[in-house]
Length: 259
Length: 257
Image 1: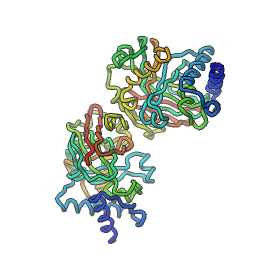
Image 2: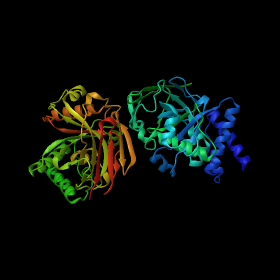
Image 3: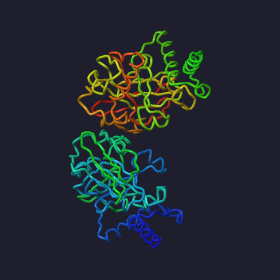
Image 4: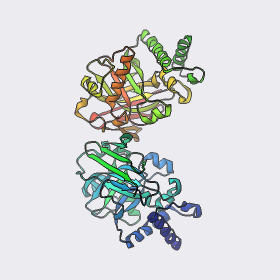
């Protein structure tokens, strides 16, 4: 089994790097479990690490009841963020991506180690700041279609992310009530509020720490956590401009380019 | 034009008996003007029976809804005193297949006589904005509505609840104001004011201008439900519905028999 998981991790890693679509792993390997999928994700990360691209944080997926229902699960999933996934300006080159979608997010930057059965107050005490963010998700599977096992193995569709320049104290506002408006080429395409993330974004971080603990992992100081999508993700195309307004917290802009 | 009264009667009975009917457009080629006339007939009938017009609702205020019905503008319906419930109450109203929506309601300090009104006129004429729950419903079986069906059916209105309190709309950004719709304590939908035509005040301006075209003034004290900030969520008897709009406050209601 361990050999198979290594082989699959290399397969996934290769497709993530080459931006070539692949078939669902579960077609050929229906016996794979969710734990196997997380092991594939971990092994693929080792390959990133070897290539000089270290782990800098975590992302949560399936953080709305609606999405959990659509995949038939009752808990979110997590993925790994590496250094090369972070955008440093509001430009998204499509090179290296297959069929990307963009969603508004809230990011937590952690200053103290978080592990075990933490509560929201542990998370607040360990949070340096909260920042408006956007995530670019991109499934390596054909037609963005997958099972739970597939998406976990594919690093929860992680691809790119951008954090706002301005960071806020965790006590700055009620994060569940922050309204978000996403415009694509000037038209409102999605709106939402922080409560879309498990009722409150802090619950997503709590849940992440619980899930990591089951794998013997922890959130380390300095790490960034993308708590979850606040709206549906939108497809983007070359030439698009996206503007995401976070109520009272500023605007994130993203220009989509060919290469 | 005998059809107008006959179709109005069919919708009236459907509501009274809580028995939905097939789409009017299945058997009649109705224009939107015909449909507003049918709506008017039933509203006048209820007002004649002692009810009164307390305001309006604007519907089809999101691009996805407009696309779904193949239209380029919103529609409106009338809000009657009998449709108004209070924050915290159990809604006892003859509903057939209700859904709930989170909305920002405007209460007007001054009358608005269109056409030619802008968002700024609306904000100036508004006494306060307040969170609202709109319970929408359709007298058309399975919600199989075309534009003329919903317009004739009072823009698929059911009843509504406006929260306590209220805030001057010029003290906050209504476009980015976030709203959360909870059903039985679970987040069902979230959205922000910009889902309503880019800004909810634009919806009220559209309404005042539309009413102006029809020779009606949006009256002082009117309540306007500006449009849903998210998709509508089906509800059942006993469901507890709560809408929270941050600094604007909250409103809740329970769905009755």
